[in-house]
Image 1 (cartoon, rainbow, N blue to C red):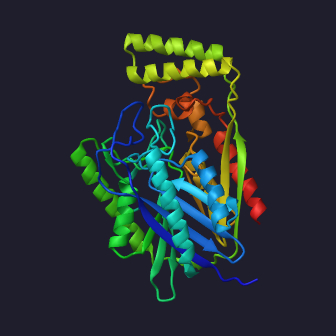
Image 2 (cartoon, helix red, strand yellow):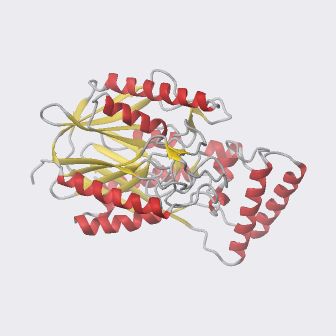
Image 3 (cartoon, rainbow, N blue to C red):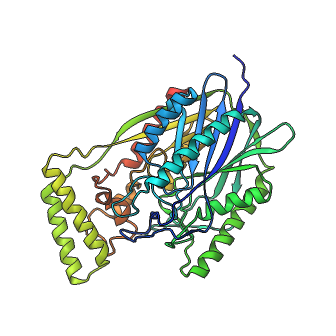
Amino acid sequence: MSSTVLVGAAEKIVDVPLFAELGGYGPFRGRRNIGVRDPLYCRVLTVNDGNRRNVVIITDMIASSQLHSRLLRMELAEEFSLYPDGIMFAGTHTHSGPCLASCDVGYGEPSAEFAANWRAAVRECVREAIAGEEVVKAFSGKAPIRKQLGSRRTMGGDKHTDPESRFVKFCREDGSVKLLLHNHAMHGVVFGPQLYVSADWMGDVNRKIKERKMAEIPLFLYGTAGDVNVIWTHSREERDKNLEWISESYTDDLQTALDECEEIPLFKVNSVLRSVELPTEKVDPAEYRTIAAKLQEKAQQGVGDVKLLNFIHDRMIEMAVMAERGHDFRVIRDLQIVRMGELEIFAIPGEAFLVIGEELMKRASVKFPLALSVANGDSGYFPDKEMFARYPSVYDSDDFGAFGFYEVWFGPGQLRPKFKPEISSFIVEKLLELEKELD
């Protein structure tokens, strides 16, 4: 079998309907889009070794949807003669774009028109990427983050953030860069809860990559940044300045490191996708009703964020009603790995903490592994055991939107049960177990 590998890439703007609701920043905010600050893109990478073709589809949105991903995966597999397990979907996690499907209740109503536009853009990108496949060389490297960009959302002493961006540039024989893939773990929330569409700092970096002619097409992979935000500023003017310096600093670091790389083989292409039941706690309707009553009492006393207290109270009651009617609360999500020679991407369907990605990349069996969040759907946060230990009770925080409570106890916001404390280690071990199927 020939070891020749062909690589394709394409990008399309995904149109956002006027007044489509933008997701993120709290329940029932009604963030109806009144204009586009910067466009949202769908971008596609294809890698074809003549036997299998992997397709990585990244869109500027808060998260991919499991249902939309599963349905479109089957359609793409049929239309383009692809193995379904080699088709990966993910969002860049901008909080200034519409939702394909609701994440938390009230955190952004899905837009059917946006979903249709997204599906069309994905199809066009996949078709164009496949048609434009060509022989390239892949070079991988790491760009140290020289000026701190992020802040670790933790009450503990460990403020460690992602120390680098990881990149792969796909170069033609003439030296031109067909595509630059870059991966970093930091939330896309610079722009804040405004009413304009934006791809946030990740989109600004991608724009700068093209303006500086670092690559024809940039592709950002959102890392395991469940506990890593950008450094916050608060006024609209400060946020615009923050967006500029963060994206400028990140792009400078990336550009400086592009020559400090080494070639990696892309042969051979393989993938695995598995639907897995995630470990969750049992839902006891009596317990949920007791919690709801205590939260309502706090709200009546004016303790904490009354709006969030009432929101969580309502979701707790709904969970209790569902349990009393025999609802099956199992959380079944898709874990996936796509491998292209020594390049491998672990796809996690939720907001994993930084430690999860670092553990996966440390223990992976290939030379250049990457971790990708909010892939093939969303399922909330995957905190580490330390966070579960720090917040063992739902009453451990008066601010029920604060770090700790939100990540550990906010399952009812999605009408799903709380994850068990071993959720992060479960994700790591299950993915490493799946990786062995590719060896």
